[in-house]
Length: 147
Image 1: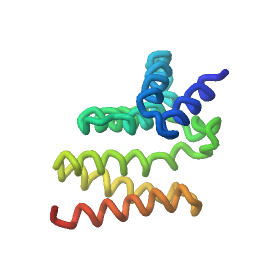
Image 2: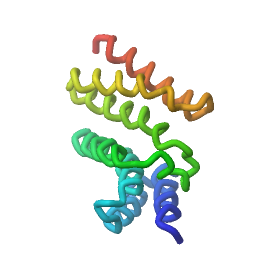
Image 3: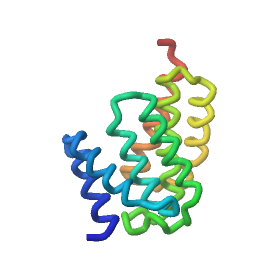
């Protein structure tokens, strides 16, 4: 089994409803990485954030995912069926903007929302692209609506 196979299996468990077991598997994968394994670490951090129940920990993983993404070459995620690493960037900014918004860190939330919106040119006009664009639009609306 390749590293990517282990990672996608762990993501599947996590997103399949067993967050606790998924988190354990994702952490096992994380612990097996080296600091130079930027593609693996980016994807793992992206999904580890979704397993957190505390907003501070969630945001920390989202920050790590974006930090690791900065080191990716364009084809580093091709093994996952993601032909352009740039197409993950809008989702990473969306997640950070949402986390910062929930932490009442308004300036950071706005900055990442704008970066996510600016990066949408890398998205295709498919289900994933529409989902991320919709998420950015929904977050923008939530951020302008008083709580």
